Length: 297
Image (cartoon, rainbow, N blue to C red):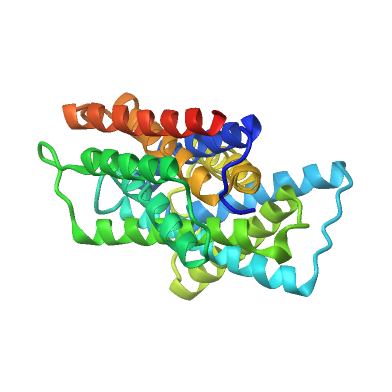
């Protein structure tokens, strides 16, 4: 489905907003686990594996077919590895820069999606381009250092890599003709399965105690939260939104991701709410409102 102007799709926009909000909840569950000494591989493995089990059981209850062709399985393998790369680079960035800032920088992916789409001869409308530019400005303002916050280049680089991986994932889901017949829930199931295997293999290669830092029900509850909100719900709604309104518009709606992350940082982790944060949020929300309003018109 190309990013062409067409009728207003309420469920496509709603799914895109829900994707951004739930994915922005990564710091809420992930940051406490990392601060407790749980390794990134362990956090991400259980995040994907628990979501994989939950979705698999639901698909079995619904008696949905898991069957895919070899060509589809190959593309699903690429999707699984790509999304896993986006997750691991984001979590590694948390070691160098604040969680809210890292998640905010990842939101540069709409620009990357739009650029990739142009190379694939998919041209967003001027309203969407304007929304992209406005959200880009908003994210830059959100990312400006303040107070004692220091920006380590490693964190910036890892966050940028996460954005690129996420952009590639979106474009493949939207543009692959082979995956058009794969239902969003089944597509998500395979992505989660491949992601679980990716993190398990990565841990086995790196070594170390797999359950180090997991000492009680609190850690398991946080991993369950990661599995349900920024993983299972986010991936399913992402696939729905991308297919209904296109990769570019879905990526712009992802502005709710950094806004959610910033709010969590302020309300839960006592991160400071500065003037540039407020200005950035206002600009990005205006950009999304403008795109949705012009799309409806």
